Length: 164
Image (tube, rainbow, N blue to C red; front, side, top):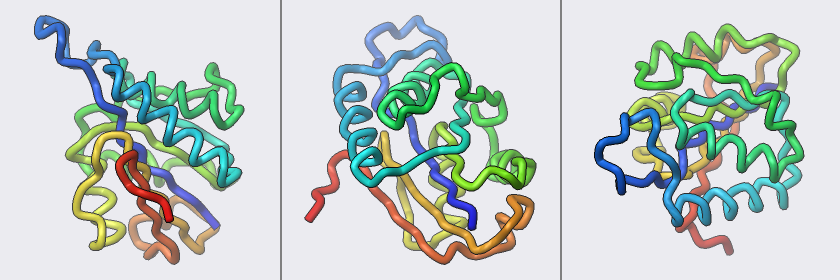
């Protein structure tokens, strides 16, 4: 079994319009939302074998906040430049190149490519709001099969979703 989490970065600040896109930090709502989503993952006892993030400041801050909630060492977060402004094929390549020993992987990145990839795996997902977490479970032993295999289980959670 392989479980893939696609995590769109939390809400970022546009206060400083002169900042390069990669350097935009999280805003106050983003900080609150990522804490909420990290808590939800922790309450479900979710564990990650690998957290991989885009190098953009807002994505890395999202990855670090979630890592902290999951007791994942922040220094072990892998930064992958292909998660920033890539295409769905780039993201699939990153996934398919993962070590087969890893069971649960989180990719923290951006729209539109994360929504497009989530939709590729499940037509029921049309949009990932900021700080959304799409979770896909595949019955396969190798990440190289992801993209060809259909997920057996799909979950979508996001900050404004009310839990029953």
